[in-house]
Image 1 (cartoon, helix red, strand yellow):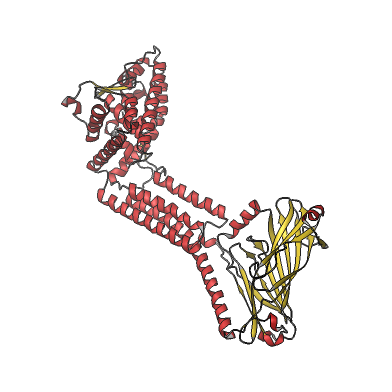
Image 2 (image 1 turned 180 degrees about the horizontal axis):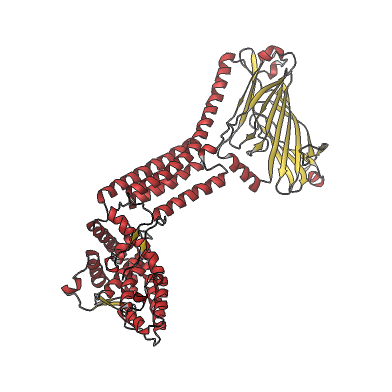
Amino acid sequence: MPFPFRRSLSGSSPHFKLIKIGLALAIVASILLQVPFAPFSRIQSKQESALDNDAKVSAALFRAYCIDGYRVDLKVLADGSAQVTESIDLFFNNDCDSITFNLALQGATALQFDSVAIANVNSAGEAASQIEVLPAASAQQAGNQTLSYTLNEAALNSENPATRLHVSAYIPAGSASRFIVNYTLRGGFQYVDQSVFIRRSFFQSLGQQVITEPILMISYPDGIAVADVWYQAISKASFLVAQVDAVTVQMSAIELDPNQQMEAVLVLPLANLQMSFAEQSEPSNINRAVFIQTIEKEAQKLKRHTQTRAFLISLIWILLLLAGLGYGLLYILFDREGQIQLRQTIKPQLQNVWRPAMLARLFRNHNPGQLLLGTLLDLVQRGKLKLDGHVFRQENGHAASLFQGLTAYEIFLLQWLFERVATTDSVSPAQIRKYALDHRTATEFSAYYEQFITLIQDELLAEKLIDSSKMIHGRRIGVSLASVYAILAAVFGILTLNWLSLILAVPSSLFLYYGLKWRHLTGEGNRQADIGRVFRKTLRHFSAHLTVEQATDLQLGEQLARLLPHAVALGVVRPFLSQTAHLTQQKPDQLQAFLRTFSQSLIATDPAQQLTDFQRDLEAMDSMLSASLYLALGFHFYE
């Protein structure tokens, strides 16, 4: 009974499915990280990294507030002290009743707290009038005051380089407020060749958070020539440094990440300062030019590191794109070589279709239960076995005639099941399940199943459907590419300290899978694989392809019986039996002929009910075999 097959490039191969999964994972990771998927569409600024937006998301979701603006005004006085004003714009995601600032010494000899104020910020970003926050004499008093602050009582010294400012103020969620903190630092300057310098970290009073629009304004005493002043910003973020006026320097950035600490270095001539001897540290022998050169090298090194890290992160997306192209190229070279043709009509005769297990393996249907059950039903249909309910029986025992006309894997299956699993002339899925799950025989079961798959593979090789030499080359290439991507994932992870590099493990895993499972089909192998794919689709709706003569053929029951093992092995038994019920609805004798081929124990008098019972038996056997095999094999799919 011929069936028409139409070849099409459907993309149903597991290779394409895995490639789609890999690309989907890459796109999901790109969305989560909020970086573009295409590497060339990414505008990488100096201060950006792959964690920038990720940190924003984390702050918005898990922090009580976000920092929408942070300005620090540092005024250096002639007596060696520095007045600091920190203005911080906070947007509150949750209700807040208090906030804590850490005011650090960082080399200064003393810190004098001056005041704190709060201002509400309207939608235009302009602050309303400030409200001064008054100190509380005690914690109990602070709790009774709407706006108050407390300082820790620890002395400020080298062992205690910071003080904690605790502000009590109720702010509802969705509000924006500006906190203005004023304090004075004393000391902290160091000598460098008749000059003094101060080096401090900024924007750290609220800990590690993403900061939008950080601005640092440094002013120094009048009378100092601009040419005698040197300053430098040191940060992974790109700070724009400019001389605002004769005594003011501005350092600003678009954003400061939690992992992008900002330090500023300011060098002033000593002659213009009036510091007392007690506040002066011991003079250093370092030359001013050498010191400045050292700071510049440090800044340049950090800049190069940041640029290298940004380049490597961009390179990750390029490598993912190359991996996708590599999959397609290897698929064409080692799986579909010269065989991608559209709409080629193939009309094979039914008797020329490959046996169920071989056809299923040819286009990678790896369900173990379906492979075994389809092979057993094919042996039943060919008269080598009998099926009684869930029990398969050998009619001729171990006679040599039983093995005539069988392939090596079919002979091996019969010897395995009837000599190792069962000691009589009958075996059932329940016995196979018990054998597979018994810890004493599970290892043996796995080895026998692997040998069964190997023999099917050998049969495909013997029929010249697989090119073994190119299969070996393809596997070597797949494993090599997997190793390269695994190494790149590890190296990029170490260099960038960014978990985005782990996405390279996705193509590495896929290349490894292909490297271990790859096979190269010959031209005939590709043709037969296409036949199998289309044949599987045809089995789902085969009644639509039957001619009137074929549908009324007196041998219809026998023809349907020859197709059933293929439907089982190819995983379309349910739609196949549904089509069978439709075709034989008015032909109970043909349905009986079909059922008699596979079962001797159906007791229902209604043929339609007998077909329903038979379908239930097949599904039960398939489920039992599949579950047993997956458990015994550790859910491993063999190629």
